[in-house]
Image (tube, rainbow, N blue to C red):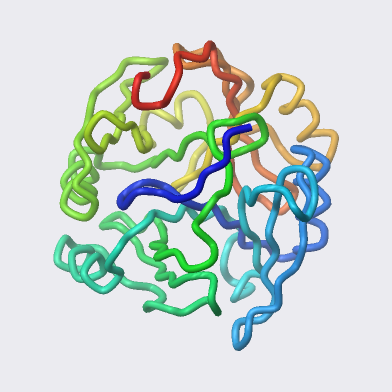
Length: 268
């Protein structure tokens, strides 16, 4: 499998699960995707779990930590690479977003900050150290997409265009859909919650990661067997067959079986 040695600025680079029970969540995702999980002890920040493909030596796929507060809902957070975290935070605040967690050194792994956009959707920034981000993407059992669900798509275009310099391309799948792009590279997508609620579930504005699976229907069925929920039944769209899921704690994610392989993402 092609492994990733780095992520360009403005692109998704990592996904992190906040769980009320990291042991149970680790078992669920390892059984669902065939991941391995190991624990790092980060000085002053406590334990941090890392999911990998294969075994402890395999490429990193995603991270996991305990919920900081019992009042927080379990969730996946999408991280975006930046080369200057302070300047990006200044831009976020000037564009109407908020800083939730200030720049924080995560040992020698890198530096992070947690933010929200103008509608309250959480996302995070990452400046890599020894952890460049996901060590593999766009492969089975790895992250292959990130998606924003929001109420005001025009406002989201403005905000993320200011923050990351993203351009947009409009698509028409089962509902109007927006691709965020940097140059020729698609970095993620956006859907209106109003449209999404017709087909799937009610939700507040949020980002979710997509993970590539070989069989979307089998993964959805396996999710239910393991105690999770299928929020959107497997559905065919032009890029492939996908489903929106919730793990046993309620954290949302999506899986997709691509319709075909057209080569690198920038060519799609």
